[in-house]
Each structure stands twice: as structure tokens, then as C-alpha cells.
Length: 195
View 1 (cartoon, one colour):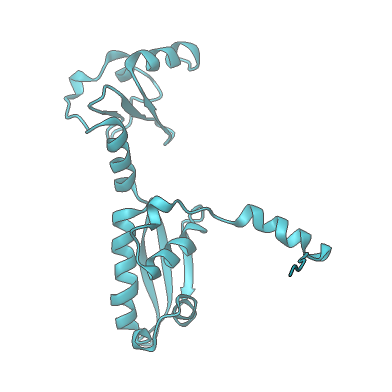
View 2 (tube, rainbow, N blue to C red):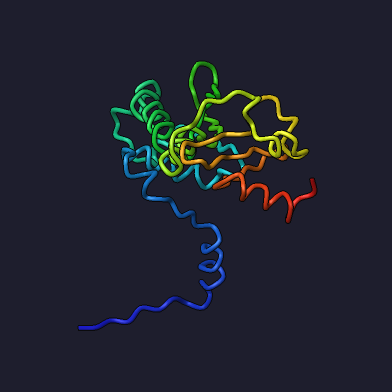
């Protein structure tokens, strides 16, 4: 009772292309999501780097296989979209806002704007490094305060200390790095960066 299955060589280019396009979703993000939210998360995650994805409402309902009771847009929005938005904001690494495009009074398309969820990232960092510490600007170590790639950021804190002694640095170019200690930061400054 055996059978053998093989793929045609003609499929090889398509199968190889899939390798680069498949998005691996971390279980820790989707485990707390409802079924519709999981599917929406997967579809938006594929377009995370683009930051936006557009869906026709009817086609989206078909892909999600919503029951007839959710075909009316207001019910679909309440029972599927709003819940997915709330759950993803609470549990995943991305969240979204959406805009409705209408023909007359009927909503025909949805434009999802995909946003990195800083709240979940911060929660994960706090679990790993401890709680955030309140501080005055005068308490920022001098080597950090004086570093030219850091100083100059005004809109948000560029120095984020944790209770275990580690801290996160937000750089002017938008990148960030967590250092286990001030000594590690000083080593990086003296050996890898221009100061």
C-alpha cells in the first residue's frame, strides 16, 4: 500500500519562487487571535514592507469565508474588522488602520495602512530586560548624551533605560540597539563608531 508523488519539472520555477514569498508567522503573535484576525494578520504581514494593502470588500469577505450574516458591511466591520484591529493591536507585532472607499453610499474597497506595533515590542523588551526607568535628562550618561549620532533627536527619548541595567538607544537614522551595559556602549563607541 504505497504510492509515489512527484512534481513536474515545469513547476520548479514556481516552487522556488514560493520560497522567497512565504511569510513565517510567529506562533506567539497569532495564538491569541480569532480565526478572522489570524487570516487578516497573515494577509497584512505579507505587505508589511509596503505599508499598505487594498482589498475589495466582497473579495475580502470571500477570502475570509464569512457567513451570510456578515455580508452586510456594517456587520462585517463590527464583527470582523474592528475585532481584528483590536486583537492585532493587543497581541501582534503589527497593527492597522483602514480607510473606506465608497461608490455612492456603498463601501466597495478598504485600504489597510499597516503599522509596526511599538506597544507589543516594548512589552517584549520589558519582559526580557525589566521595567522602564523614569529619569531626568541630566541623568543620561555623558558619553551617550554627547554622541553625535544620538543627540539631536527631539521628538522621542533616544535613551531608554531598563531596570536590569541595560538600555536602548534610538539613533538619528531611525535604527535602535539595546546595550547590556554602559561599558558595552563605550566599547562600541571606541571601536566601531566615529565619535
